Length: 482
Image 1 (spheres, rainbow, N blue to C red):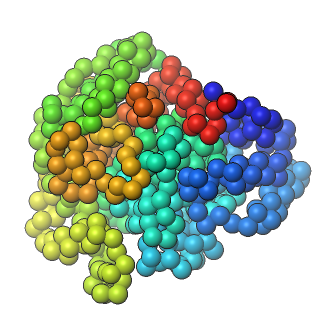
Image 2: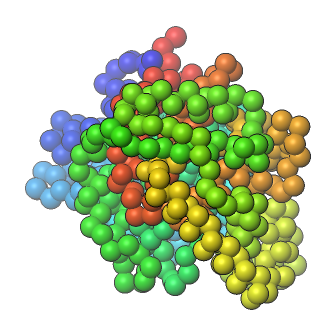
Image 3: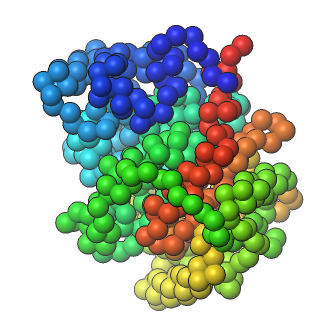
């Protein structure tokens, strides 16, 4: 149960969409909103280190006052009018630090907004700073040499996950209404699970990425409710001339009601792929505890796997990910900048520069074969369920789990393999909470749909959320009544 110490606290606890309505109706001012959030950040952020590069308070209050003046003149920018918003530090915000968590870019200032950032700003948000991320987003543990480590709001000795760990921790502690993130290997899904919030990895092309290659990374929304996530998706999504692979669908569809019947829907549960994935004891049990809830919604949940060897998915994933890193080959080639890279990045680059065109061609064929196998599964099932992580939040001083249940991990990211198949298929995934273990540590599950079926996935996530209410039921200790 959340504390209700006064109006300012209540303002922070409401969902973003409700806050949006109060601002639009002028029931609360943008200055009041900004002040409440900044006061809250001042209290809680020093403990978790989620928001970094925070801008000057007086400047932010002045911008909030401008938003109030706009409302008074009948100028309403959009549903995020007056929202304080912090952008993940892998994305560019004009005039703000853009370090990517790397000592190489510790002094870099962004010269322009990334496209989705410009869209968030155009919807009325006030950018207050950045959210913390691991160096270049490598690893599902948020620490870097520029800003340090982001810790779990549920246990300050543990990691908040990553790479959108700062965003997720800020949401859990009610320091932001909504948040953006990016996801290649579960970076919107792992921290959602570790922080008891909602993350959404959209279909490839839903949020435009420049270029002609469907790599693995996408931007996406996070929030404390599925409806909030859907509205932020509507702001970030939509085609762009510089993104030829972008989906050409009006993002307004994500602002419509998410209510629908799921009577007769079929869900495939992949679990640990019949023991292929190592999982910490308790993870699968918590995920499977959600089955009766889906059944109550009218869904049939079956244990079922695609007809494809997951080891082939992993092999092709490694090649695609290495290929994606070659844009930083110059940094790796220079001994001065290579010396500033963490070992995991050096490992990635060592493999990247050794790739051949034949390696990439073979990986592309495996990816095509995997996509075909998944589409065959979707001929029988409407959705797929999978754990959002294979372990619970772990020690903040541990860079990555060396082993799980006695099984050694052979890379720094093998412990997050549960997210890889769905990244490689480019399909939409909602990461939703499934509860807490007996230590009070959170876990989540991935709801996976067909490519392009983002709204259907959000609708099922919404129906599940209405039945469980995990985000509002179990808030971090710092927000609980004592």
